[in-house]
Length: 460
Ligand code: UDP
Image (cartoon, rainbow, N blue to C red; front, side, top):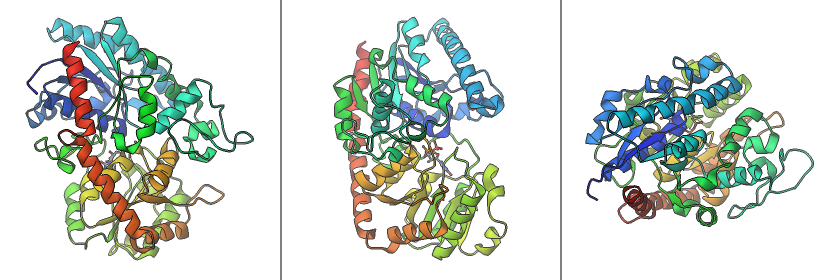
């Protein structure tokens, strides 16, 4: 498509898991002639090499931050969820509006705001300036369908305790209450939950709804959503190198919240045979209890299989004392790595994951079977889908204290890597990898949706 130069502001919520998909989508827009300006929070922008990004792959992606009111430490500086969200709600719209004015003054006016659903006030800013408002969902459509039904009062929450025995929403298989997102199930983190639901208050006014999945993953829910809004699935939003390779050199997410140890893990993986390594990671946010660390650690050791475990630096003190020494010939513990490189390495045979949505999407797109150990948020629902809908994994059982025990973990890993289900899981994982590729490749469902969205932007 020839260069059209419509300028859009892409506004992600400040977390690794929510930045990655929107950043990837920006690369696709740029490759199709749109001019994206990425607007992270000022605090997050300080973690980015903005010069490298602006010249990244020759794509014209600029970075211009807005302020959440905590420019030095973001969420950590705020100290609590309510303090952070209150500040974001007050300072976000104000400074985003200033940014739009500034861009106009500079002779580079914006045509649309593509915003993360967790920043719903961005739609008000878009409307105030007469811009197009585009909502981006970096999680599953089923999860959003459940939130939508709660927001509209169609599901009474919390579900825990007496109440309906199962939950049904259009296009989603019947769920046990505990398989719904944690806020819906147990009413925890009320401020967060209210924030999450708020994204549906004005959804009827948005011009487009974009989703980081690909159509085949959640056809029925996408069809249902499309009866209400203009919806486009544009994923999987992972670097092109791991899919159709049409974006030259697009090998990573370009942004790392923590310092990666990429060459260490690559060298170590290279010494291991095909499908032999367990990769375990709980993403960028989850904080596990010490007893849970203890069970996971000894469960890994008891498999006698080689493992690579990402434990963020801030969590490493919770590892059992002798664990690193005792498993020095068996495993490697690192603070952060390139998950994509690990999942695509032929030595990786199984992914023990908290089922953050990006992790599941990456496993599906790279054909790696999953052991799900969900913690909170939407992770339990994602794990349910991995096991029962996409059939690429199994969920570990929790005990009555909510902990996955060492035997349970070991059993699941054995089942995935050498048990009866192994062949079926591998076959399904390969199938999803192929479908993910087809969706993003020229003429695939996501490629067509991106083209349609680009034509819409240019034509408006
Ligand atoms: N990730 C990574 N290196 C790591 C662990 C995770 O690059 O060592 C990336 C991973 O590829 C994914 C993101 O961090 O894109 C985590 O997002 P997810 O939605 O899975 O979980 P969250 O961090 O939001 O809980």
